[in-house]
Structures are given as C-alpha cells and as structure tokens.
Image (cartoon, rainbow, N blue to C red):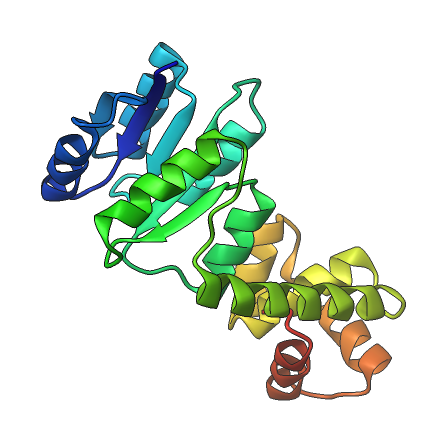
Length: 212
C-alpha cells in the first residue's frame, strides 16, 4: 500500500531534496509540497494524506498551531516535524499535540526514511536529546502546576505566568480581556499567597517551578 504524504517547508531546496529522496521509495507518494501553513492545510484537506511532514517555522503561521488544529480535527493523519532546531517548549507542545516523529534537518537522509517507515507502521521516532530534556522540563512544569493549584486560582496562575514572561499589567489586561485594575488585584493576591512582593521574585518563583 502506498501512503500519501504532504510536505510543508519554507525552503524550496528542502522540498526539492525531499521529493528526490522519495522518488525511489514505492511505499510513499509525495502528493503535495507546500511553503506555507495555509497551503499545507488546503492540501491536507484535499488529499487526506496518511502523513504530514512539516517544519514548525513557516512564514505565515507557526507550524505547531497548524498541528494543534489538525489534532482537533476528524482527520486521521500522522505528523512528523522536520526542522533545523526545536527548543524545549516547542518539543513539549509537539508532544502534547500528538506529533509522531521529530527529525532534525542536519541528520542523514536515511534516518528520515526510517522515521517515515516507523511512524507509518504506528511507531514513534523522536530525536533523543531534545525529547529527553523536554520530558524532564514537562514533568517539572506539571509538578509545579499541581503544587501551585493548591495555592492559587487558575486565573491567578495565568496572570502569574504572564507576569513572568515580562508582560505589564496593561498588556495582561488586554490579553485576558479584563480591566487593568482587576490584574492589579490578582497580582496583589499572588504576592500575598506565595509570600513575595515584587515582579522579579515572582518571575524567579515561576522559573524555578518550570512554569515559563
């Protein structure tokens, strides 16, 4: 059985190299090559492929956003990330969104073929070093969230993470669609509950618990 594959990558040479690599592979048919997320979505809906090979750094939209959208759709598609680099937070998102494979572009081409074959057969293929670090950070973050849930409300936790990423009260208010006064109250309550009194200490508190 030949499996259909859609590829999305912002670099034409990468798409050309992939097409050449798959020419001698009878088990895979590259039905579409795309340079943007919007094109990728159109081709996925059009061809309903078994596999999507995608770079997360697309010009019109973050590839992880598209992956999450596909995860929540009714399409039965296995997704593999092929990219130059993937940081820990991106890797964590990829794991949460059900990505089946992660391959770095500097790896030998035969490893990409092995990844496609393994994922097509129902397995997983992950780049060990980045995945290992991401798993450790994800577990640390989830443990921190569980501890924090006994202290702060969900909205206070959300506000704290916003503060820890450097957003001002006004920016947080715009993001959460509430008044700046409401945010000030939340920040004051967070300070009181965790025993700190400034944004720097709050940021350090969140970082130590893997929340940002």
